[in-house]
Length: 254
Image (cartoon, rainbow, N blue to C red):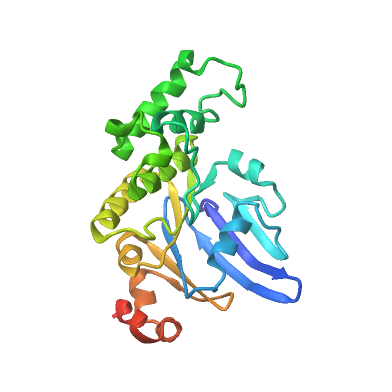
């Protein structure tokens, strides 16, 4: 018997009053898969992420994680099940150093919970996990720099680190390369590939070069509906997808 999908969206609907944002969305993400969700601005991609992570209530349908229904769970409970995400706008502890950001993020994974009264310097597992993540992110040389003073690309790298340092097995990244130069994007893609090894990755991204480089499968949203889902080759040749990306943007699908 095959294992349950890491993430399953079954007939998911989201309405804001009379405005229908998502309509009968069906997406299956296998465990260990890198799955990209793409679509024009306003297609409902970020709203979908908010629903998966419990920030927005679901208006209809069901969301499950490894076969467990998480449709009505809180953000905190979903996080405890191993789901973490980044946002379009970087969200860090700006006054804390890079190392301190990662140490705080590691608290759940190493059993420190919310015991803020503990002397974290003396809690070895947190320090060790943060040190491991510094090396993985390539930020060891910046360990003592306040997060708010990092270059933009390094801030995005740190945010990705915060998404996984707590032990998440399913990672949702929302526009992780937005605003980056080509060189910075290449570094970010290499980092995402490295940190998602052995994990399930769901990524919203406008840069089609990034999407086709990273994704095992792609789902395309347009006007709140999934109009295509499949391998990069399948999606690239789909007429409905090309129609959704009218004009110059469609050139990236060629």
